[in-house]
Length: 298
Image (cartoon, rainbow, N blue to C red; front, side, top):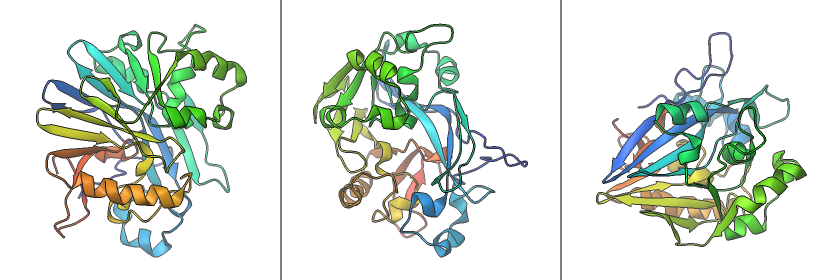
């Protein structure tokens, strides 16, 4: 069994980034997790339908301080010389835990370094496709490049599902009016089923947000479903009825999770869970031999 929060916290309690760069080949397409940082989540705060007994029985999902640790970052999709980024992390941030908040500490800012390690610069990203417009997914989209006043991904289109853009509330995500005004001209809305990159199609699911989307990447006889925030922790694969406190529509999100888990169990299907710490790539196996989410290579 994977330790989903391995090395998430230093001995002195400081939050560490739990997940490194990982890549998967799908035929001629390479997909890579691009780490930006991590969020600590209070288990019952994030998943309010759980109990203390739930987490006592599943300490493998928690770090040494008793928190869920959710990786943040993006998914780089490369085909030949072309490159697409799905989601863009939180950006440079270091926030302490706040009493009364479902979150613990937050640490971000590594995404550009991670891209560089993969041999890519921001100017090579032709588009950034967003699963939804929460700050931990769009941070680098509006954050200016070091020493400049233009966004880091100045050469990229920003792809957003039509209903997500129509119901946007960027101010609630800590983006100022000025920053929102600068971001808007870069946005191109996309529709359900639209191909946004070779072998990559958008699927609008709703639930977590009004226009939440996932991206289906196909190649080499396989497919990968980058499911965004439909799932926040691998434990939800075994319990899709457990919604996250941040889900916009808990009933709809639970219905979608049930369908998603069934789809992830189909042959030649890989899931990408951006918040799944050191187990971001995996498959669903319902054989009674352990948790249903099986990290690739386990």
